[in-house]
Amino acid sequence: MSKPNRAFAAVLFTAFLLKFPLAHAQPDPLPAHTVQQQAGGYKVRVGDVEVTALSDGTIPIDLHALLKGAAPEDIDKLLLKSFQRNPLETSINSFLVTLPGHQVLVDTGAGQLFGPGKGGRLPERLASQGLKPEDITEVLLTHAHSDHSGGLVRDGQRVFPNATVYVGKPDLDFFFDESNQKRTGYEQKYFDVARLTLQPYLDAGKVRTFSQSEEVLPGITATLHPGHTPGSAFYKLTSAGESLTFVGDLIHVAAVQFPLPGVTITFDQNQAKAAAVRKAQFASFAKERALIAAPHLPYPGMGHLRGNAGGGYDWVPVTYTDREAH
Ligand SMILES: [Zn+2]
Image (cartoon, rainbow, N blue to C red; front, side, top):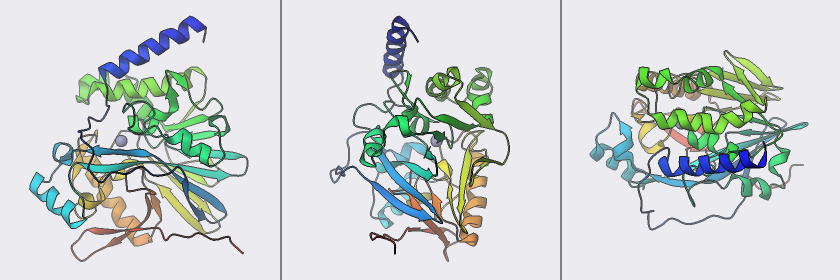
């Protein structure tokens, strides 16, 4: 892109931020107990593969306004049971998968899209792992929402110049066809964000899509689970008999949606499908004792689901380890 074009892109981007300051509207102020963490990563080993959770930051969200299928007083009761309150400080997690010859990111956080201080920490967290944006070879998007694809671009330019971006084809088809906005009533801002974040990679020939279950990288299989968005995908990493499934926005709020999987969030493009997928997948993950990784569960967002007597699920975060393997 030439210099004037670049300047023009920056102006467009600023205009976009002013028009859509927050893709998912977030209330202030921050809860009084909010603290800032030091940069770093949280590593787990899956077979022979190292996976590092990287925090893009946290953001308070107003569950009374956003959750559907639970009354505000019931939401508050469930939050209280988990020693939390509304608005809920919510993680934005990305995950780094280190394969031979590949540094793979699963989702990229919000970038600049939520405004200063709200998300956008992924580059510094990568730096804490000794990695530059140029080192990322692939980005696996669970879906094309602002807090997953936002980190792909900065001032309209690609942040990861050497990365190929994988995304479910139905997301690309849906968000890049304006008639779907009018047909479904899904808010215009979602369409704008998907285009803003993916177009620079499309222009560079750096986007790959999948329409069915597909091994996108050695040991990583993508599957489509439409509901939250039409192209919402899981990525299952398998190595030496172990596995970890990146589930995207299958869940946003542990305190509410593990006991009540039928509760949805306004961001779900198809509310009924999103609830059905969540119920089915929770049951299957609990039965299989599967290890999962979720962008919005409290950092590091990795752990297991366990069915409970109340008909819901408990969340069991991964066991902390900090020693050298021998
Ligand atoms: Zn989402």
